[in-house]
Image 1 (spheres, rainbow over the protein chains, first blue to last red):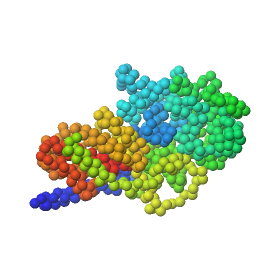
Image 2: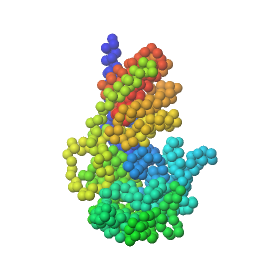
Image 3: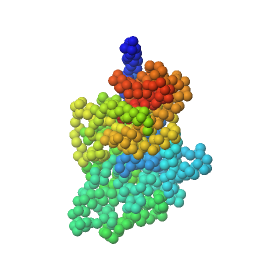
Length: 400
Length: 215
């Protein structure tokens, strides 16, 4: 009798299993949804079922992927992680929330042209209008960026605020003493970016990390000792170790290009943990540090910068477009970066890492460039996620 | 710690270990920090189409990392955001993977995963206990007023199926179902309170298996 019951039970389970078999299109829909949103949902989730229906009807995977990019998790999870890693100096997700991260996610939600992230005079904050005065104070009233702390953005995480629902676009960028930033470069003018990279240095890190975050290159990747060194500052020793050889072969490789771009941030600094822009037309004192090391070196007098990253290798790497030789100020520098092919390739690489769970391999460079060209049709992050997730090299074969 | 509780914890971990083998074949070696993290290489290599077997070797798997974890747990169980769960998550979050690399799967990580899923399943169970069976999302066939031995025969298998489709994104295999049911027999007593423990055991064990926490 027990054996009979067991047999009946097993046959029931077997028939139940076959009735609920997971079809290939359902699996593909589930994979697309999970990869695009960064959130696991049941294989029977209505959105996955809807995506399967689209695939079954013979429409493209891109059509199905649109269901996933419209999901709130695309902004709350996927784009927030994308932005966290773009912000992190170690390409890690383990960073606290800030205006740089929230602004990237907000721009993705609103379909902002990605290039505006480097030129726009806006940032995103969380809507706390529904809180009373007391709670608003506890939340952190850092609703203007010219403030000395990051409490506003950290509170939002603690309270589980959804970026897709709570972010609001605010303009203009503010700096120390509540002055509107006269030369805003989008994320390059956020409080977190300036405080992180303009504190205690010579404003070279602002350039270095702009390239790292938005061109996906580390300094050693694009150093080039063949470039002219007429813009190298006075604080760089030309006789390091007693000879000029080290300077000529190593130091110059980075400084020739970095120091030529550095004047873009000539007026940018930090005062009391707050971004500051010198509006009286005098470059920040940090650019003149250690001026006695080589007094004949270049003195930054204004915000006119030059682009020396134009050798054959770097020209191919960055794919400059438009006026690429020189410019004035942060916004023009942001425009140079945003208009380059290097920027769109970098955004593809970053999205590829998020969605496809690995770095793109060198042999996949053509595919990356192809996706970057498609991304440039709209420069919208939702389109980018759809392009990457449905590309053949991204997890299609045999994946769950 | 009571003997029963210790056995429960041990078996829960056992199920985790049993199920850990899944998806390991998909682990590819390139998910490492040694590769150039970004940028175009100095000399762009020629583009060569790889054989299919090499392309399959590129399939990678990543453990769900800290910043995806909470949203995935709540999504899989259809749980609303709660401070209770957030507190449980926060206390264990430092042990979760920061980047999702497979080499971050360690004993402390698995403990943290089990602990968070235990809290999440407990919260879901608490919510669904008060509902009629037909209204429930996860613990559908269970009658929590009755002992485990008095439950309908399909209660356990339905729970396994529901969780497999929610967390593993597929149906469970016969072997998996047998293994889980066998382990859960520990709770088959005549005590009504053990029904909840059995359901909790199956839920937390299945959600903590590697197939449920890899992407």
